[in-house]
Image 1 (cartoon, rainbow, N blue to C red):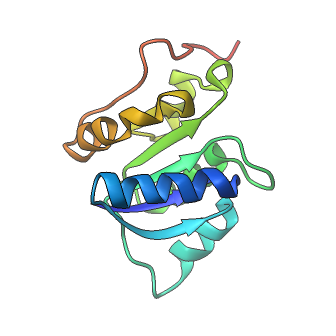
Image 2: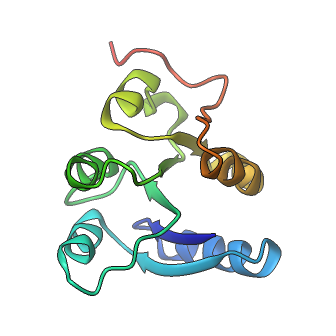
Length: 135
């Protein structure tokens, strides 16, 4: 799969990229440190569409939720998976409303290949213990 990674944590980006490429033989086509870079990428004529975008939902400047809203507004067919370490701040209803196809907690990142395959095959994947409402 062709994958884009968006995460503000440099160590996590590098580790995830290496894990996806070396262990699972995926093709990471771009890596960005914030949502603005992803938005700029999709506004450029040189953009290359990935199979899946893995995006952190808690980032400075513009978070993953607002980034996804801007990207998916023009590219509804893109498959985005929310990545977060904040299990208590990932809300199923919000992610579905924005257009995310899945979510994975960083504590379960070893399951990333399973999640990628589920979403790639046009199914949704959300952890069983994800919060239902943001109230």
